[in-house]
Image 1 (cartoon, rainbow, N blue to C red):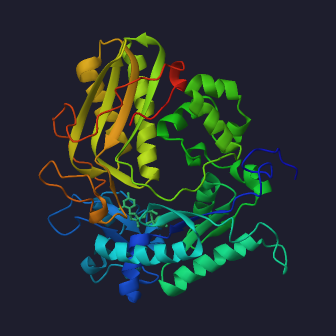
Image 2: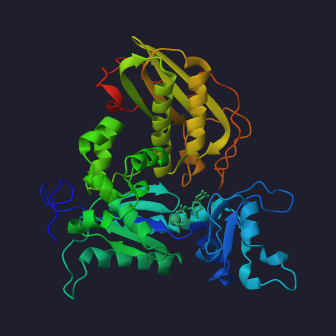
Image 3: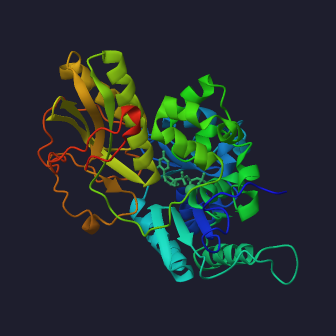
Length: 442
Ligand code: DCP
Ligand code: MG
């Protein structure tokens, strides 16, 4: 099938890239099976706080056998236990096939397994972007090719990905799903497409037709808020998004609208860059005309919060501080932040804290620019020693063990986030108009 030529998906600027996205299957549960092989094929739930008397924990992950019973990541342990009782609690008449093995998160062990997997990935590719404890992008353009293998209709790239998968299985003993595509966002969708133990290859000419039936929520950069808005425009799939009028998307979402349109059409020119460790993540947006309308301001803060939370999640970052920036004409910059008692990955909390900070002091204020930032970042796959620069300011630091995603009540300590680097105060860039001037503010 002939396909429209787009930069990044065609040979307009050299050969198409070959990007692998590697994501381990039910990773924590797979690690538990490594040291307890008898758990193979059994429903396994890994979480925190399910011991008698605790009850406040959450599921970190569940094996695919446990998912059949409706157990899933981030679910309260109480719900998981209702759907899949603990095997040790069974009475004589209960069915052991409908019960699960519960294990407590042991992050140190999972990190050591992850390190073995990452060592293989670094051996297989010169450019590896580690995204979380069990996920990485590899650029292997220089190591293989999109050409067909001599033996038949498979590409050399597919054979290469199979080799990576087999090495992980043989040398570490855990299963990975791999997506292979000419760009990052398609590779990520492909790795998720046939889990567990998947290997999905999307060749350069097939990107757009592969993406077409996929829900917009799967498109990189679309958070729940954007997905809802797109839905209200009748745009439910990547195919709908690809066919939508770019100017309508731009009117609705600013420059991001155009970006999303391009992603849905298979264009993603991000290159795989080795993982960096940002200290904070933020985004801001200027109004074409300063406004004091609280609903306008809240809407922008909601979109920015969703975007920043999305980005934090895609980089595997958890945060302990959520803040906003409010620029009052002409250049009066105000920042406010709330510290949490432990690191979280919680998009809804980012939105509600940012809105609370806005409402508390700036409900009436005329503003020309708003920003949202998460900071005091920690990374699931980071050693403590690499969390440099992040002195623990509050007592009760929990260090990001396992499922700290169960959100803590924010402390009411609004005020300038003393530990944070100051926001960019000098030389505010002139507004490029409306919502389209999304720039990072750190
Ligand atoms: N994790 C967690 N809390 C969550 C989500 C994930 O603690 N809400 C942990 C446990 C997972 C690991 O991170 O094993 C990797 O996350 P994934 O989203 O890749 O989930 P899995 O690897 O468990 O399952 P999948 O096979 O869907 O990739
Ligand atoms: Mg995984």
